[in-house]
Image (cartoon, rainbow, N blue to C red):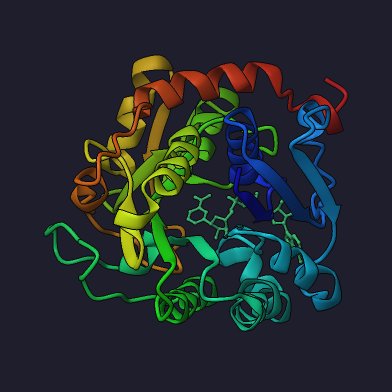
Length: 311
Ligand SMILES: NC(=O)c1ccc[n+]([C@@H]2O[C@H](COP(=O)([O-])OP(=O)(O)OC[C@H]3O[C@@H](n4cnc5c(N)ncnc54)[C@H](O)[C@@H]3O)[C@@H](O)[C@H]2O)c1
């Protein structure tokens, strides 16, 4: 079986992906510094095909031998999202960008990279026309700018796939409630109200388990798919924030949606995305938005907000 290195494999996407690929029998090494003290992989430590290295991708002496040993590299390690990159620009420069440049310097032609990038770089979109992989990019935040620069660099090599992921949703052992769908559902559950800004701005979404399925699809169909960029999202879920809230109301009828222009999205994300290129390779997502909303509501029942309060 091929050896796969997943950097950031203990993260929101990584822990779902690692478990998925481990159960398919792949030989997986996770390289992660467990930045959030997450315990997301404890339940698969018993698997003989799982190897864990607690390390920092900025530590070339530690990461380079792992790169050399692997057939396939899935680089997920990053400071993820515009706010954390704004807070720590040096960290994001080194982790999100320079570590990928180090990877490119230390990888041979025959090794494979399957890299998640982001469709947030479509920015303001094309006035309602679907963005495909050839549409102009308009990144604004450091996070999105770096992702675009990295994608350009990695696509110069042949054995590479870039997956421009839509906003991911769903439960994961390393949970992220800073992602739009997860955040809105949690607000519906905990606060029963939300104040929306730029409520008509549209985004595209994909379930975290479908992201794992998509990586597996790329591994299984690599020779036909390589050297390409693919949008990965739900074709029936190009939804505005307001439309998403309406969907959540189906399951939380007491959810009150208010509007006020209290803020602006850093990347001004407002786009409709075409996912037909990845679909034409045979990939079909399995989990829709409604599935995710119901799942996250269940997750909210488990995750109590009482940790730092008396009642
Ligand atoms: N979640 C989304 O909606 C989304 C969308 C598009 C692209 N992506 C990309 O997918 C990847 C994973 O994102 P995620 O949502 O799982 O985020 P995450 O924050 O949960 O995962 C990042 C992982 O990287 C690890 N990490 C951080 N700094 C590190 C370092 N210096 N050395 C080693 N490990 C380090 C963290 O511990 C964490 O496990 C990122 O590259 C992100 O840009 C995510």
